[in-house]
Image (tube, rainbow, N blue to C red):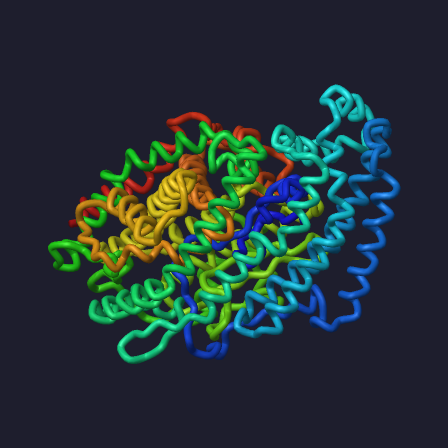
Length: 630
């Protein structure tokens, strides 16, 4: 299946299947690094709910069955027509074949988008889980007939393929073929690829579903009340420290009681990855993800090294300030997201949040705001609070012939407004890139966060520039720093944890206690001496869905945040004529260009170590400003 850029944890990239990665110009699927915001309460009045009928009217919609039947017939005909012919096919014929392949893939993508969004809306409904699993199995069967195509394309010699580009029709597909062939050295035999593809529904996808349904069905004891996991995690941001401590203890108890299950899921998936990595000859556990992101291992290493080296001047320094503000000698892990003294915790009505975000977007680009407004004028957003709904937030691009959908859990706090700005950025990006078509609209993870983080920055800057009170300005800066630390420092710590875990898993199964030790190691080094971690925090690795659904995904958030910091710095300096149009062109490009080509018009180069320092300096500069206001 070809999945475009978007953020959803419900539709994981089927890692073991090479064709899944090859079928898209960029694949990704996990939620952004937001504190989960679900609630045990029913949806609040006035919050929008999405209407999925633009995809299908329901699980019994005859159009769904008809489209899958037609796709199955088309896939069989496609295989009969093209299998074994690509080496001798003309450029025009190959272009026609890719266009036909895209049409079938989009039908399958539409069906899977519907199933995943339905499941995200209520994972506790067993019928939704059954429907989604059945749909996955049907789509996997259909796409098996398409599997030959990407495999056969990758067996073409470079010289043979290059000659075919003399046909003008084929040049449209050059970026897709370019990205497809990144995986060429790691391709297995057709028989093995088909086996891995067909076993996906009983392999990694089944473990993912087990994780999702376990989390969705869990309750957390907090002060005599049973809460959902997300509702309990949300209390870690409560103003009352005793409530935060009680919620933290409840989360620890709930996950510790299931540590054997979560460690089994983690160990099984890590071993599965090791086996596939070995067969495909990936040099290290993160290499597959880097290939999918169309970024070199060395670029990721430079990012990680720069962030780790900056821990003292970023997170260590900021959390020392926060401990002082809270009047604490040491912070506990449940103090990390605590509100600051005098922080305004008033509820922000949904219409005010919408206006705030759209006004900020319009101040930069009226066109950006116009596209964003479509999401509020149409039922494309689900923001209510209810049991069983996916926690956190995501933007799902679905397919170009439809439109994206946004999922949020809106509690009316300032961070929820930033989350709305973030997800709307994804949605706008997906709408603008859709003109490239199904295979070319998706971006790698490293670029998929560009519009979302830029949208957040626009909204934050709008609020900051309008604030004249020094104390409130400091609170705004502190809130933004915390969000950036969660996006950069915390995600790189997650990446370090995954690296340590996957490296150690190669020596044998890892006990749950040892996984906890690795978790505590990276948390201690990343958050610094201001924290005194209690032993019960050692189980918190278990609730992070990224580790299960998309291994080594998380550094993309730090990549995107630092990239946008650098990009926004160029915008503020005003040295690039036509910045707005260049930025819109970047978004419209989808997956047709790599990061070097996209950043070149702005005078930026992610392969240059100074690039990362430029992004990290923005965070450090905010902390400098906070210290100066003390």
